Image (cartoon, rainbow, N blue to C red; front, side):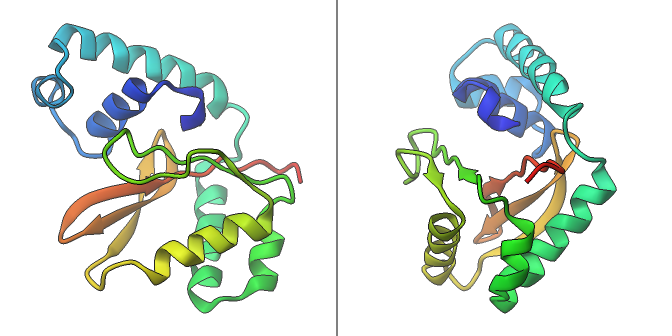
Length: 159
């Protein structure tokens, strides 16, 4: 769902929905007015509401993500291949602050290689939780006890 949003819309939405920032805090962080942040948030919510109708329900998605996490941690490639579409595309956005893939990553092999490469380089104090982001479960990653990134999913029953 996040790929349908502009960078500032993603930022405002995540700061407001996931980290519970006030509009004042968001405005200060992204150097925009509070009123503009409210409009950006509203626009982002409208955009994702259109996409939400296409996904499975929350509990089904959480079950799939839990299976994905377990299979990823145990390196059960067969299970991962069952869960990930052959048409998978991974988008990343560092917001100009952190390293991100410049181009979308396509194919199961390339996506898994990238994810395994990232996790092998991760610091020991990395931890994650499955939280609600855009009304769907997502993996929220923390490093040094601070928010670092989010892995959100667009889950469809189409292969």
